[in-house]
Length: 341
Ligand SMILES: *Cc1c(COP(=O)(O)O)cnc(C)c1O
Image: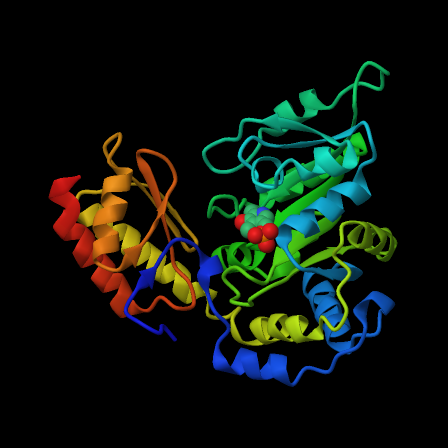
């Protein structure tokens, strides 16, 4: 697919629609989806509802909007959600829930394995007292920084929210990667959540699109908030067709991305790099303080792109357009640079 010999490992969002996907998009049957008349959007929403075991779905342009609409539907002004300090819904979405919903986050530090300590979550739930915001929601992310949350953790989180009357929203931007890593069907994870947001535009390779899933009643209300957020699209079936194509053709192959990331991680360890984490399709590297940009620039000269996280940490992500030869070339190039960093 690559138009040149660049290897782009910055993110799995850099994928471009493959010819078969473009063909499916061109041939999509469409209607006005704001009026609920786009058959391809409906098919996508129903397909994902079936896969997650949730009642209904709602197609949106981005994962940020899907999470925002979930928060706006779960919480009102003066309510709060409990969330990890570095979760996408807290840190990377422009504070949208606070900006647009008057919803306050209650961020907590997470453990290295991506989980929030559930006893700490329980203690963070505020008592019913008018001094406090009303704690309504626990928001988890799976995968989180590449790591799949253990199934029994999801189950325990679910039990906690049931006991305390909170709802559970799962930011499953990469939920298919989590399911592949755990080797379980999607529903084995999603059945522990009230609502789930899934991105089609990450490892699944669609150009645009996320789907929010939940009960039929929740999705009816979410449809209103989607409109408020400006996410009502008209002949969106052209985009939904890309998502449907991805569900048919790009789910099974996620295991290949994971295998390649594991090989890359191992290869880099073997030539002396500090791999701080390798999980699903991601590899995280730590270099000497202040050297991350230097390594990035050296790789750029070799037509390899990686993501600089901070002054000492980099991220490499495998996806649809990364093959075994690319992994070999990246490993060899980094081996050659190992002395320099
Ligand atoms: C990418 C991502 C989102 C949002 O995606 P956009 O489509 O880029 O808005 C949400 N959560 C997580 C964990 C993500 O990785």
